Image (cartoon, rainbow over all chains, first blue to last red; front, side, top):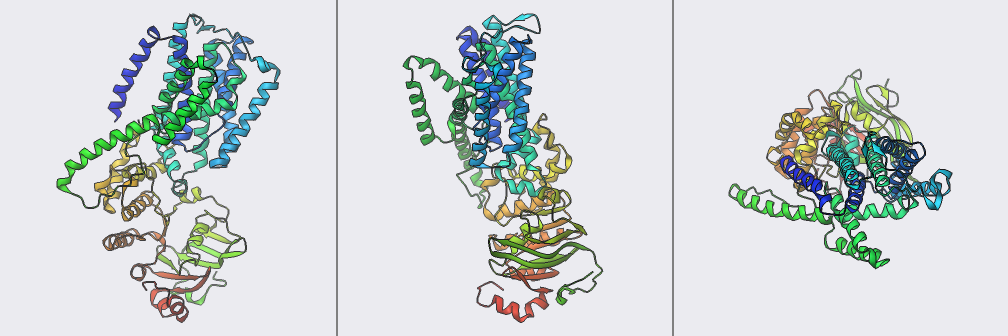
Length: 335
Length: 266
């Protein structure tokens, strides 16, 4: 499996390196930012089993901090992004610490409530510019010498950020930590009985998820030179849920596919105005009805099903009487 | 020592033997319903102690209290002499007291091998290392396979735990529990839902692992209880009805009456 991952990764990176010469780079950057956001969200939902309904708080607050530090304090882009990520991590630590005491729908409600607090703070606070947001944020010069005003240069910087974030999240999922995290998702009382202080793991996951959501928010500021209320609104929290579920939660590539799909639709259907929301809604409903595991999740399940059938045919000579199938469970290591 | 203990307790003699787990007047009420009532229990170190009783007798609640999955309404719990009434479940596991569950508790989407490995990696202190690859864990594979062989699951190591038949899930749970090399095991109906062949395999396994360990076990299969346990406590409606050796308990008229007509395979 690891080797397949590597081959796929190389192909994907090459494609992403060529992409800005074929497609509109600002659009691609938007996809990358939201893909990173969805991946960070997926760590919490897909692997931690925790549905946060307030992830806009971390995306948005990081975007405000990055915009403010770069525009007012004259931070370089890399420092601005680090400042944004730190802000998101800190916020994640405080909100996460309070929210993980609850599970399920209560967890979702608590995270939503915190995110609304951040929204109203952003609306009222003097430094955020209220309804106007922080506009005309300079893109600046990376490390003091790479001019990011050029879209292509910026694209490669955003791509690097995405790849760093994606790799860290991927590594986390397939690490000793990730194993425990999955165990907690599957059966928390059992994980406790094995001696794991599950709240510590949940909190660490929450902070990691918030930090990389923050990285995505910070990168978005560089792309659009703007931090606005849109980024902290509850709709943003909803959008990231939509992207993750569409693509397939609990799969590494699902959120990327979901984000690409949603951003593409939003961009190319823009002439239809308010209809975009309705079209997205219809797609979402179809997706939930037809393939509940999301696009990537469903594809993987089909693939594994075919492979299993083959394997079973080969094994049937040595026939084991006790092969029982419980169809409900995903038979593959999610990609 | 020995205030207020039922006279029957002194079954195998020697009151000076070390006590692994002790409860004193343990009570749990759920909104007026008393699930466990004034239970004082002493489990001697290195013995197999069975807890039996009809459905609803409070056996699992007692387990949940001892392992701190529930907080008692009143009473005290001692583990190796220290008061653990306010301790946390995860910390008890770290001090060698590990429980299993009545409903099979595996991690269905992890492989069978990974299930055992999750337990093996815990004492190693690398569980927070989110920056390390999963391959770091592969040096636990040999030990995990040994444990799987012991419970007869070696052939299923690479399959998902969720796809195992029920009895084999229970076997996996025991392997996972053993991976922690606990001093004290609490097994909640370890053989429920198993076929006869598996039952004797697991009974033999429990016998083997009981050397140097304390085992508290809830079990319905009377034959298993009679063969394995040193001491038996009979619970009824949350209270201790009797305790002692199998011979003593099985002759107790109250116990006979309690089991009469319940249809238990006594």
